[in-house]
Image (tube, rainbow, N blue to C red):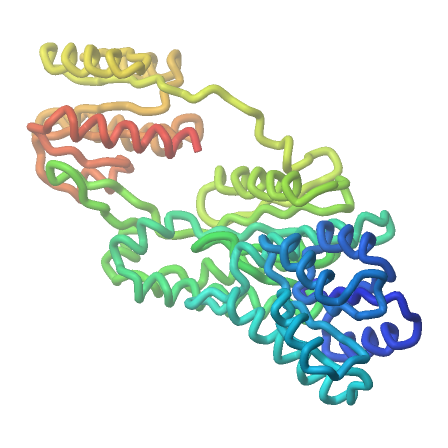
Length: 441
């Protein structure tokens, strides 16, 4: 993968080839352009990390540096000017025009490599995440763009992986920055151990990683990461949280939201099965495949196949705003229904636990506001358990409202939110809005 790329603008033959050989010996890729116009195409297509520009071009060295700096303002490459001149005025003019360094020919080979490496090192250090020490999103997208362009030839294949830690933000909110940073560093080390020097690993966001590798080993890497992550997850939790299998996020009115232990979802796409023409379509494919993997419980991965394109594997669907209210108190039930409908939700209601299952099957709601029942029967809790054990209903968000103030009893039944009675409507509907967004992805 072209994780490090240098472009040489030089119309000569022998010296650019020499410079190319020296730079490639340090592990960086090189593109050579004999004209400024062709160089601009490379600049747009590959966004090189460094541009070495020679005074052999048909434009002045100072003007070339000024134009390159202006046209590359978004990617900010390092610009090194090379000239046969050793005149101080020429050096100052070029440096004032935007160059980061000026080298006079002839140049000692060892000094040339040392200077190029020094500039590239500083360039990359500015794009490393403080916690993981991985390239940030800007650089990751740049490498993805280069990979797609470089592999546009059908004979060259590549695979991309979006590796995501699910529920990471909630974990960080409860356990704090230090624990969250430790999780990121540990997973980074695990991913790195599965790759080699020909692969690329970078960040897209906190808890989201981009891996670029070859199609032959992509699925093996994904399988290993799912297994390895599963073996370490519980180590990041207290013994109590690890044992019960979830954590509690506290909110309005002492409500408690059930948050699953973190898991990893991995989406894998490959140029073997689909020709990606730009990095935007590749990103869409990665996020779609990762989203599909997240639909499975626990850690999992999805690999693009011939008959399943990751970009089209998730059908667009309308935002599900259907709510079922199961509440035996007629006055409260009417109040909930009226308020929900005023906020644009589609509401069905019943005061019967026996009739609730049939209503849920017919309406296919995204969320259920379910009364837990009285202290003796707790029919609502039993209904919640039944729903969460049924593959057809387990993804429906359930808010269990109750007069029984036993948070663990409610959440162990599978409820997504524990809501003690009496509660304020504004707090309930804030939770409903959040849970519906989660359900609809």
